[in-house]
Length: 181
Image 1 (cartoon, helix red, strand yellow):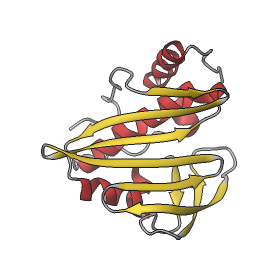
Image 2 (tube, helix red, strand yellow):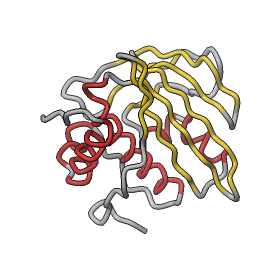
Image 3 (spheres, one colour):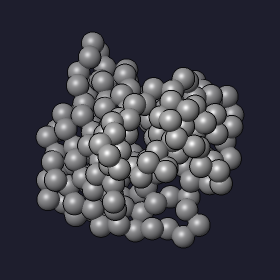
Image 4 (tube, one colour):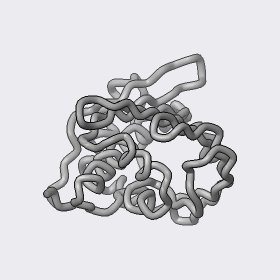
């Protein structure tokens, strides 16, 4: 069991796909949990509340659902109506979160799941997004392992030494300047 105080993020793992000004962040994570268990954590509001950078007022698990997603940790919460465009449990989930298109793919691997996230992010903030999602997926893994440590998002994440290291390392990897806040 890792406590929040003991938590240190691992090495950078994200990639970026560049198409002119459109950049897509791609994170792949091997989780020791079944696709069904991971799917529930991606779609159930109670579980999203434990790890994601937003709260959801409904399930993201059904095509056509319109769900309000509220950012967490921001000085003023930002509420976005999101529509689930694909929900093929427990394989593929797609929805929008404001200007972000979120695509989650779950593939069974051994006794666990290979989780892949694709999301578009303004290139000026791509290293921050990579660092934030990296930490969120670590928190998700701990939650699914039965050792929740609470989400680390927003300004709290930016004060976290591990997030700051990741932000710098991702900026270097992606060839951008790390934003300073």
